[in-house]
Image (spheres, rainbow over the protein chains, first blue to last red):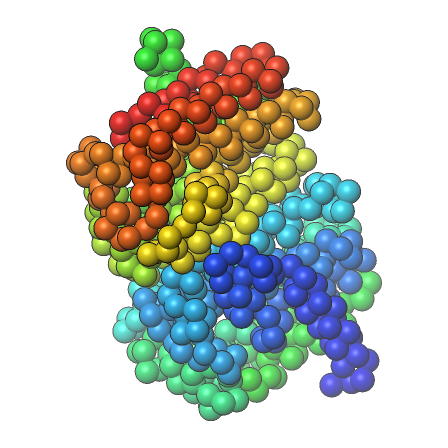
Length: 295
Length: 295
């Protein structure tokens, strides 16, 4: 990591954590606030917020809107993990190296925390009109709602659940992951882009970048699930295999999965070049990080 | 019911059901769409959509925006019932005279259907700018997010869970119900009002109307829970009592609870008079219906 990227990362993360901390209410009633804070603070790579930030910088976007978008996507991501970990879904007890929310706060507490975090995401996006222009508020809500809902993340999770023990072909696996993981990653890029001025062609190119990066992320996730230990991942390793879930590794094998992740990285970088924006080096760097990460 | 009100009700409900039916996707993947449709179509009194409609009519509001707001609040209400009925919450098997969503589609299916319905609510509120002005989209999202989240409905549910077996005093009970049920009912009125032109004083009066109606609704709910049979209610009667939950009946007794509901109706009607809007007779009628209903 160059010192320039390292500085950008450190600065971005520290601003983000501060903003997030201010948004998640510790005083929400009856322990709800504590469960929400436990589920989203102090953990995670914050890839989605970083994508929002990098994308917003590439279009010289509205800084306050970009920060709110970053908080909102991370709230949606974190709520989905909380619900996904529950006994009726993946039944996982370890996340980000700690007990999952339902282990700590009970199933009802975890469900309500997730529900409240989804609502909070839209609350964060809709301040007084003087803070963020209303047209931008509406665009950000529109992008986030569609990425989180039945056509995006929630739909992907439904396919994921239904696919246990099923011999999915690669096209079906890709469709599932495009929804489950890809939609919100892509929305992070598009929400960042929405905060500034960008041509239709530029937006389309960023959309392609986000789609390629989103799929690459999931393929690498599938690889890490079988090659890394739980301690390294901060979550239970080998879980998809144990649960008899189809993954890129079970469908393609590790070598082909790795080759496909690399090809998607090239696609992402080519899309950035097509976007013809001022400065896309953070987006390029983040795409590389997604593919080369080891946890 | 006067034939004028009966006609308004029938017409409003039939338009609403058609719009809702068009919004909830039957083709969402892996059974998600069916679970969503099962959870929100063909059932319910549709009180919140009717409040949106009546309020929008009182301010000569934007018809398309009002219909979308009506669909959105009902989606939030329905998702909350789905999650509330799950085994880790109220563990109920009967709702609107049918098996609850998790009984029919499994717990994971019910959780995801609820999650997707919350996202869909915000999707419905954020169409292309030509369909609903962006300022109105932002206002509606802002009202709904705050009513659904930690300070509103989700927060109220957290208090509800934590209050089992606790000797709440009336003020605590009121606070819980203001959040759990009242916030979304009040938001329905305010979202309807946001679709048209209304003075700050008029909006404040409608807010008071919504708050009084919301609390009256819950008090009547508590009374019906002990006085009506499950068949009549379409849900398990006597449940709060069995679960050792504090209610207006356990705290005040039936007679005082009934007196308080009537007093709140008077407050709601007085607030309407203060609002100085053109035609608030539907809102007045709905308030009466809420207090006089027998199911």
